[in-house]
Image (cartoon, rainbow, N blue to C red; front, side, top):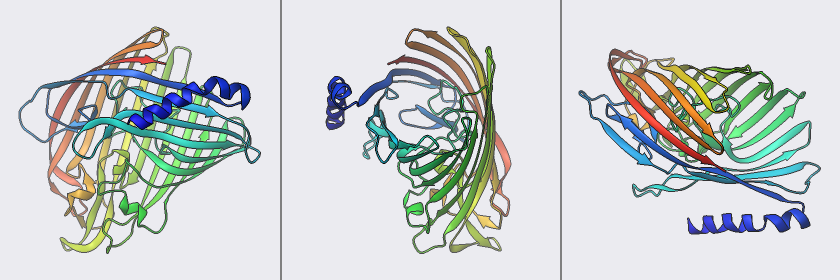
Length: 391
């Protein structure tokens, strides 16, 4: 951690000389953040409760609260001399939401680290940044740290991304990805030992316009066990945003299999024959997810709300959930969330207050294709007060 902070300080100190002598610009950014969180029901969380997913399958209420500043974030954006005939830039970003491996949270974590080469009509990005299913131009504006997970995808991944710009408002990207800290349940080894990296194709229109549309399609191979089969799953989304002077409306639909690397429910189940698991054979559990987010565009006060649902659809063939290490919430049939909020803005500071109501439907049995049945609902109310000082 000390070495990272030292390097960060050195970069900032070189800023003035770099701009004058080498035409390099280094722009620091980030925020100091502090959250107050209160829950009415015991829930599935991590990172000292900052990462909230859904209520646990436990009877009775267990109220709790927590304070935390680990969401504090820092980064630098760098622009340098041209290389290979392209304009070059790079970005490094971290926060304090990592883990040390011994159960201690709040250590420095690498969020983004990438290089971008821009040839006007095309661009090449190499490094770690947002997974294509997390679209920076269109995601929920929640106060909650995980911005809608497990209904909305949340993932950053090492990748190689080539983008062709068909016009000022239209682009097509081809992306090859691996996994790091955001990995499928069971570990990143599953995709690293598969035949090919995850491949995505993404079309975007109107990133800087009132209307924004994005569509993504992906294919992922993974090998849950070294001696088992390679499982292939597909994912797709359609993302929309419409903005007026007074209001911003966002919506998205997602469908796919084995999406636990995006902090979503599902995973893989064991392939079965007459109700008995076939050793080493796995099938992706498919899910569907839909969300919308609406907020006003006031300069001092913004009022908004997020709502969505994710559904466990089971597998395409007969299966059993025999090994939960490869799943997240495999006994959950659906998760529903609704979260109204108000955000106050003053100078470089924002203060947000949000009530997140979440319902998880747990099944006591499964169909022959691992879809939960005979469900019972458990709910939680989380109140979050989030304070940010941006720089």
